[in-house]
Length: 198
Image 1 (tube, rainbow, N blue to C red):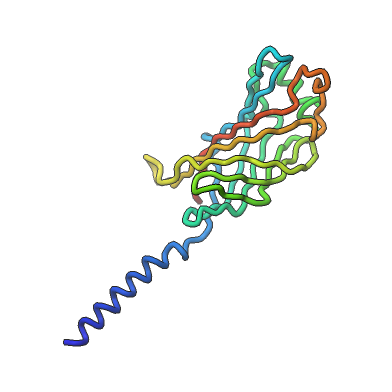
Image 2 (spheres, rainbow, N blue to C red; image 1 turned 135 degrees about the vertical axis):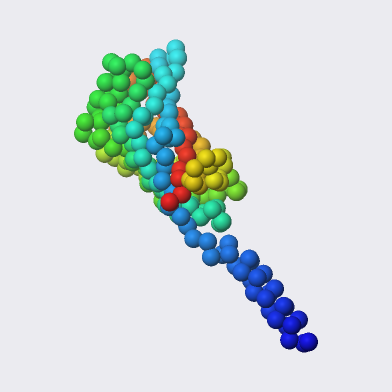
């Protein structure tokens, strides 16, 4: 009769240890950014009259994230500089030229994380290096985790993220129309993405 309670207690203890230990055993997972739900937008004041709105239509990336600890371990985004689009053919051609993106000589814009600084469970700052026009400089990005979980259909497990930063283009050597104020030097960037857990 004494054996049964002992076995029951041991089984319960094992179950509790398993439940408590599970989160600690979780490992960082790689997440691939879904190109169908990936938008990189920007705006630039034009001679003080209005803001030109644009996007980069081709980009890819991934990151390594631990959902349990909310820890970001690495992140990289690669943007096709030639995919810039503002719905104006001549302007887009100028943006690809040496005055701005210099996309022929430097076809890829890259951001690589160096460290992540959490603010709370859903917001933080991702510090990294932006390579633009062949020059690499530090850049900080404000990041918000919107939602994480199984997609409403299919089998994918998805995370949704919003990010904001400002690029001072003259630091990367694009000084066209900065001195006379015709084209803004500081360019706000907005990123919206969904990434699939691999």
